[in-house]
Image 1 (cartoon, helix red, strand yellow):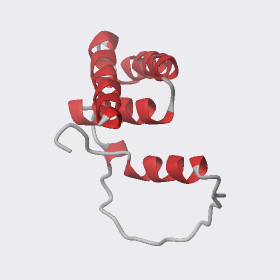
Image 2 (spheres, rainbow, N blue to C red):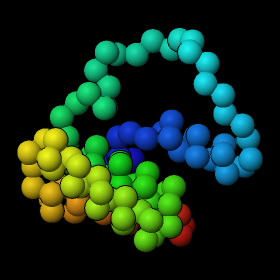
Image 3 (cartoon, helix red, strand yellow):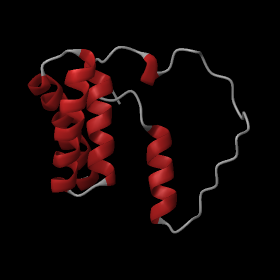
Length: 103
């Protein structure tokens, strides 16, 4: 999607848990990736929207909003950024995924 850039693994795990499957952690390498991943890059619009979309996918509307509020506060402190602009991007991700789920 042009809106999102991350979170595929989390969606897979969420879907597996919803289907009642068990997940086991095995500390084995199964793929080689670039050393720079989404989590190690600076915050940007796509990363924040992807986080919001994931929260919207995993939680109810109120739960997603509450998680976005918490995340915005935390990221604002850690990255010395405006919490309201972070929250805006997170909530855009929630809105986007809700629209996608409706069809």
